[in-house]
Image (tube, rainbow, N blue to C red; front, side):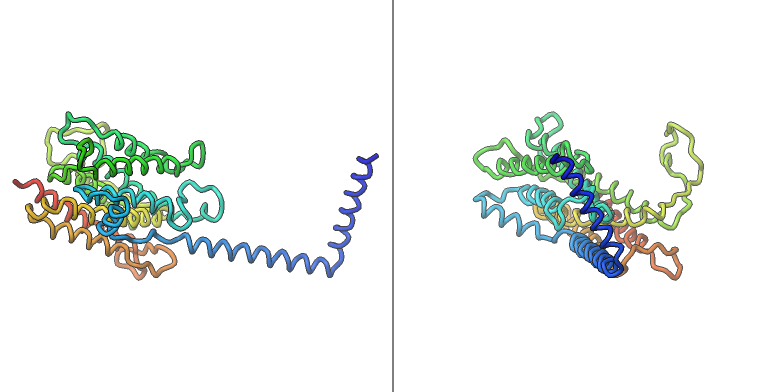
Length: 354
């Protein structure tokens, strides 16, 4: 009996709703309410997107390292600034406005492809420096033992950047940051020698070689925004060189128009992270840089990369032709990145001199 009464009650409520909706006055009120609700939701989402669509705050690597060392009562030893900067970059990636968005699957972050590309650019530089720290900078020679904390941090940063859950990417990167903090604590302990940071010219050159390749690739992808035909120089310089499959003498490369802004913001994120890492390197490797007369070269690289972070006044990344009426933001960015890359090549040359 109770079930029948419940069903009848549901029917009565349904009839009342339909009857009210059929009424002209009620229909207008319902329509106005729906429009107002949808408009409010759109405005809220737009405000959230504008708030999240900002790069992380800049920071001074040296001053921040000194502040951390003072708070934790640690010694500002060689390598402290570089390691703390790497930790700060990881925290900035996860704790910036909106948090880490690359693995989000819900609005509005799912519509914000520029931020995930910026995050990936930062992440690539974190991964590269963590690898150099683990394989070269923290080891005295190739036969020496690797640092146990860095052996955890480096692979954790290489975890899938888009994993939403089981496990979420943020948790894996937090583990990497925790391992780096453990390494930093041991590094600053002057009473023990189980953690080291070897500020040598060859170690710095090894990391710069990775940076050089990253910037070279980004520069090519940016320049290909307008399409270009280039001579195939893959085997140039070695008459005995060979490759797996034949390739044409001339290659045509062009970045898809749907990927123009993706490459731009990935480059912007990569340059932002590099600025902070290079400033940290300037402090930790200062003796080597001064001895090699390479300090000015490093500062010029930083200057070129800082120019790539200027405000963008256009609502979209424009892709005009090289000498056309419309601007081409990719070519402007490529110019800064190419000059920074050329300066890195010169810096590596200085470091290799006896």
